[in-house]
Length: 292
Image (cartoon, rainbow, N blue to C red; front, side, top):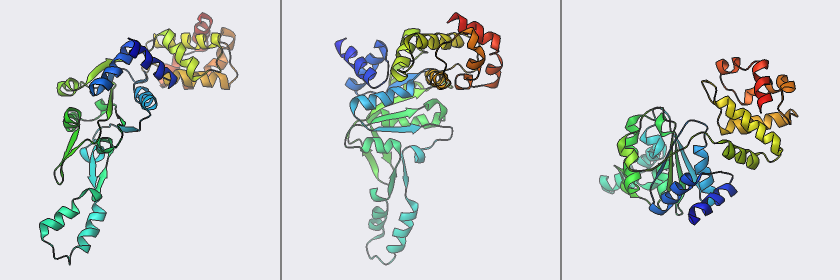
């Protein structure tokens, strides 16, 4: 528990407030050398875990942003075809055997390293963030399994490239589709929920120290009440911080019913869909502000 607490304090120093369960999962990830799979709604701070870990460990952060249609060439490696074609032209009058010339063309100097290959090629262990893996196609997960199991990548023209050092792997998912059992088995797991009042207040106090104590409490209480509403897009922690900055920029230092009109002007930082915004009338905002 002392080690968990120490890691919590280190993460807090890097600007991330972590519950004991998350800090314990991160400690196990570091000790066991296993990837850490983080699930939760968008905006709860999953990506920030990797950023904070890189800061704490003094490591390079390598990020692979997943998307529909992501393939091995964008994620792992790609051949520099222009340089290879130039090399082939230059080798036309080379008397060496064809297999020797082919081996030269398909060598590492013509290889373009993408995030996954780059991560296992670093001399010092980096933090590898595989962000929003659920956005990629299911077939892409199969490419990840070899990397997550043995920290190696097979390249047909070169053979197997093994990790120089083992990266610290953080995988995030928003839960838009179910991940494969094979992927889950290779990872430690932690679910990250929307923050409690105390945690969100601590985040605001760290990230927006210019917000006075009582004002910060009002802001967090307002946001927490917004999340309890039936919305298409609940505000995440980033929206809380953006809204705090917007309020301060417009000179609002207290939330009350008298300032409802001015508060309405700042909701572009907090509410992100047209239908959700339509539900925030002056009367609604005044009532919510008065309750804070």
